[in-house]
Amino acid sequence: MRGAKIRFLGTRFGAESDSAGRFAQAGLTAGIYLIEVRAVGYAKGSWVLRLGDDDVASEVFELERLAVELDPVVVERRPGFAEQRRLDFERRRESGRGYFITEQDIDRASPRTLGDLFRNVPGVRMQCRGSSAACRVRMARTPRECSPDFVLDGFPATYSTSLDMPTVGIVGIEVYRTLSETPLEFLRADNQCGTIVIWTRSGPGP
Image (cartoon, rainbow, N blue to C red; front, side):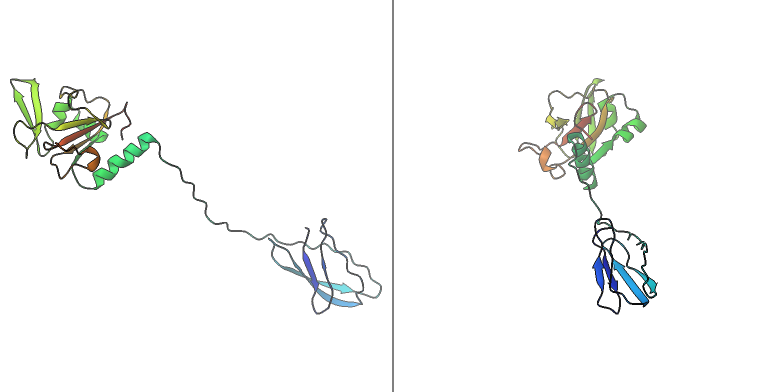
């Protein structure tokens, strides 16, 4: 190795290895010498060299490479749009505000329609007139004719969402029964009847 520092301890002699890892030291008298070699990235080595009168010695000194512990490398990336939606869904669920229905909950309940799914949600009432097709949903703490807002995959969908909507493809639902439960991202100035947020597999949902 190039640039290793060689010292003959107890003497004035010293050298540095060349690009081929070689060095030479002339002017030594007969005797016993302790040679110390240091190089960056290698453990320090020492050897005993015995020289007689008029001796020419040629030796190979092998250094042990040091194990280098590098600082940990952290790779970060920004989540994709769909992944960010999933993270936001879980963040709101962990806040303890509202009622959340996951894809696993839907699979266990096996509801046929959205209306079937809402029948077992605390604080939600189903109002039906004659047949299931005439049903509407409202929050228990709101007036009888007060209908909640619907949000589908992040977009307002109050007038395009029906309780007859199949649950196939729905991967998450957030039910906010009061104004105080509703997060700011779903809050409207006239939002007094609650909000139901639906995420589907085809949209950027959780």
